[in-house]
Image (cartoon, rainbow, N blue to C red):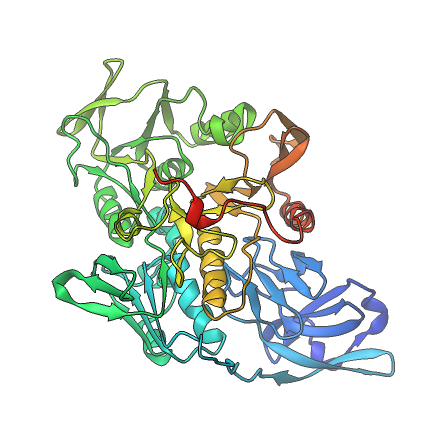
Length: 519
């Protein structure tokens, strides 16, 4: 499409330009639009993903779904509905008419709101504990499905649910404004009749009495409960590493505090070479701060990506001035400097520790739920207690692809689990079978990761890292577990779809949540 002179799809497109699987982009009444030939029919939908506004013409068609190339949202061509996160909002849709060998886009189609068919088992009141991606996605899906009962979200944070990935990326780098960060505005919660309780902590769950108790002696009843309490950063345990002197990054408050300190900082230390740590390093380096990364690893992220891709990430950061101190740790923080275990002293106006997180499972443990290095759930994301579900960073579930029980800390996974848990609260019995996905941004280079590989015995590499056009495929006993791509968005989508097709029809054969070992 000529960006300066977009094609008006209302004036018609020759059918010869729309073979099976074909897409023609343009505009409809000034809105970006896409005319698509799929499954023997023509559809007209919005041309930009409702998440980060990526061009959907570069996506992948699979049946009646169109997949976004940037962050793997999926949209139904027939209705525009966002089938799975990270996009939550539907695309616009228009009626298509064929006349004399041409396809004409006509009037806009407005889908009526869903009406939920209720029964005696339909919860009259639902409580969501947690104000992150999983909790917000669950609340949104409940209302989208037509649930009209009482709905309460309880969050220990001062801010409503925000776009957490951007806390270490664009917001920290200074490329995103604070008002871009909320996933939903305050008015949305009122319109959807969602009671949003902020800066509130749930102190206990009465499983038998079906109530959660809050700080200050408050309580809320529930017929169904979603635990989406997320994870908390591991604190650096060395002399001088007091809160406020050594920052962690988990909440909007955390990111704002780092931004405030970065305004006058000249020297920064990032402790830990994780994805979050290196995204922080990239964001701070982009602000003109001298950044030193300290980590015990010999190669950054080698345990996740392997040595070659890990070395590439290191070199990418070094090209932007980041200095690495690997094979060592911070031993002491003293005022405006820090000492490494090898005796080196580094100046530091700003220190950020990204040394890992722990799932917040204390509430679930207190309630007597089964624990297995996280909250144990079955394929429907239900815990060992009927009517109580878990999603996001705390949930350990039977992964159909790997055949293992896994727990991952990915934003998109958390949102998708929240959506599936919501549907299961309404009795839909949807197995969670999504292939894990996350992305990581380092300067102008994005890595897309599909699948889950805790260990592997072989990596297949195709393409060129130097050309930023490559894929890494991770195998264990000839089983493909994960794919990492750079500059190959459509290949990432195809890999995701292939993994979905390879899943067993009935999901993973796993230990029931109620029999999971406690730890």
